[in-house]
Every structure is written in C-alpha cells, then in structure tokens.
Length: 340
Image (cartoon, rainbow, N blue to C red):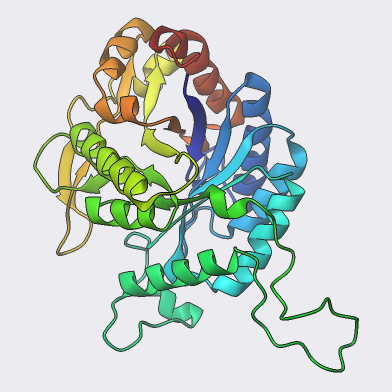
C-alpha cells in the first residue's frame, strides 16, 4: 500500500480557457481541492512554491487554511525554495501552520530550481557569502532551519521583559513538536539525496532529475532512492524515512479525459537543460485506459522504491475535474497496483 497525494503548481491566468483566472481563484480552489481529495480518500495535498510567477508563492497561509478546513489528509509542499527563506521566521510560520493542522504538515523544501527572474533571492535580501553560490546558501538556510526546529533555547532573554519568561535561553515560538521529522528535501541529484539522508530529512524526487547516467528517469530515480536509503541506514537514524516521487498520470475513462489527454501522453522521457550547466531528464506523462496504465506503471522502478506517490494535477481545469482525475486513479488504477 502506498500513500497517494496530489501536487498542484497553482497556476492562474486571466484567460477564458482557464478555470483559475486570478490569484484568489488559485488559493481558494487549492483549499477546495484539498477538501475534495480528503473526501475521496486521498492521503495528501501538496503545493509547489514559485516566486515572481502567476502561481502559488506564499505557502504558509495556504497550508494553515487547508489544514483548518480538513481533518485527516496530509498538507504539504513540494517544494519551498530555501534560497528565499529566513529560517527563523519560517520556523514560526511552519510551527503555526502545523499546529492549526493538528500535526499533519509535510514540509518539502529544496535549494530551488531556475526561477522567473535572475537571482530572485537577491530581491528578498539574500546573497551568498564569499566563496558560496546560491545552492550553498539554500543548503545553509536549510541547516539553520533544521537546527532551530529541535526547539532548544538559543536567545538571551531580556532581564526586564514585558511578560515573564520561562527559565534559560529562549527558543522560537510556536514550536510544533514532531515537525522536524516531517521535513522533506527535494533532490535532483544523487549527491544531495545522500546529503539529505545524513541530515535526517525525508526525500522528494520530482518529474525531473539531473541526468547522471543517461538512463530513463525512473531508473535513475530508483538508484537515487537506493543511495538515499543506504546513506540513511549508515547515518543510524532511529526512524524509517519516507520517499516520494511525482508523476503525471491520467486515466482515460470518459470522452472529456480523452479530449484533454488522449493524445497528450509522452511515451518517452525528454532531455533538456534546466540551466546552462545542468542537463536534466524529464519524466514522461502517463495517459491511457486504466488497464494499460496499470501495466505501464508496474514497470516504473522509482514508484516501486517509493512509499508515496504525488499526482501532478492540471489545476486550471478546475476543482471538479481534478477531483475526477483523482477519483479515477483511486478507483480504476490504484487497486490493480496494490496501492489500495
């Protein structure tokens, strides 16, 4: 049995063809889809974070609102770009959202991917230290964030405070106990997956990966996951890690599905460059009749290695249609693969 969630990028565009025409639409529909997904029995509602784009950007108000509207489903991100984040403020925001959700937050973070503007993190007031690049800065922000989530006091209290303090050094509040174990690292390379394992983070692997061997995406991801699990075991962590992969999967069960996706499935991975130096392999989309999908997905080695599968959804087609996409997978595909 696997945990199944959806992953939404929260696109919006003021176009008559879009069901999501404003930022307000994107946010409110994201909450509605989380509610609908919970009612259908899905395990997770995850959201992508992009800055300077007509997409979801500020995750914590959305996570808190979705957490308040639901009772069981995991609420998460995949991923927050740590180059843009103040670790102290993020601890407070994440702690508040997790407490509102009753400890259901699954916080996916990463060094980020190429953005809409050049070095956008500079506009947020951050720049790499001497000898660092932006990836180093993102990982440094992450290490500070993880350290603060331990909840140990570090700040010297004012001897004449406005309100009484507990004894000793002070920590950031509100702190949500257990959130440290629910932080995931979005990794595109084998090396960063191993680094995440050493730091005790869960692993998220997306629909693209740094092309390190020339093999298909699912083969490279499976090898990445095995390297991560070996590093986790070597590090001696007490708990079992979690691993997710993302896929675009559409079961064609009616004429509308066939109109949208009947000719849109990519039967092979694509190779490209996410920046001038980094060659990446982009995973294929799966779109077929349910029985065909079952046979295709049985061959995906990375899905077999992971315990969680995130289904990327076309959010601009509206909440009702995306709920149908989710229900079709849960009803017609998941049982045939032993996921349900």
